Image (cartoon, rainbow, N blue to C red; front, side, top):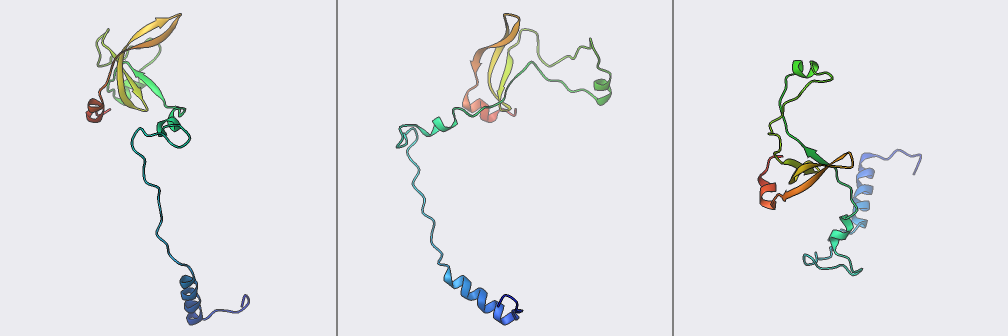
Length: 128
């Protein structure tokens, strides 16, 4: 039948026969475990995510500039941000605010000392 043309009625009959051969079964899923419960291998589910890298950034402040002002920037230009000197900086993980800290210098490198962690409630309501 490979070289023959299948007429419309014959094609419909073959499709119907093909669909009848396949039995539809309901999917079965394992129930979710209790939160904090360990898997049979002795690891909690969170252990699967511990090695996933996430981008961390430190934000000194923000500002809004026009395109003209941005094009006028050059070496030695100063960009004023919405923070006062000495005010804590924001620490963002994957773009979400998680903590605030202060800038420190360690052997000629900058670092951030965490001063305060943001509460889960504040993270949900924060628009960052």
